Length: 221
Image (cartoon, rainbow, N blue to C red; front, side, top):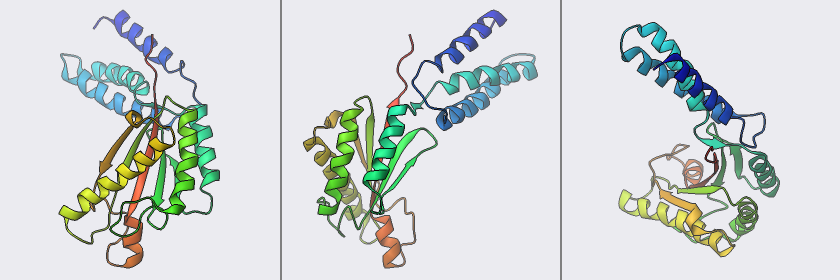
């Protein structure tokens, strides 16, 4: 690729990073830049002579391109995180920002679902009510809801149960005005434990719902 073209692509990619309404903490951008740099270096070294120079150039370009791929952590997302932290204070719900700039809510079983059940518990409803309000205030966001179970029972039972838990959470949000088309659901059964399934306390932690909210980077143009 001619050097002028390379420079032009690099400038365009770097300029695009400044177009979004973001705060100072851009962990997702840094992650994307690192991945892009590694990929660019590999591709640069593998295509033709002068592998070292190509690797260095590929790393620079890859970092710039990688930095503009992924999710935005905007002021709106930060406000949503703070609102949910306040709404869930003292409930055991964990609210965090992920490395790829998504808002994560981890809802334990003592709030969300009883053993072998997928209906929404009363203590879960006020949290979902507040969450729906923040989603309606930020309509550009998308939502991914993942249901989990403990290892009690077979996969034939746990897998559909985990899907049902995610589906019931989605359906409740829909009754509060959140478009179901914004929400993707998954069930992962007992595949991703966060604690030991050898005791009741660990199994309770594993019976959970995780909700991820992302504000995709808008198309550049």
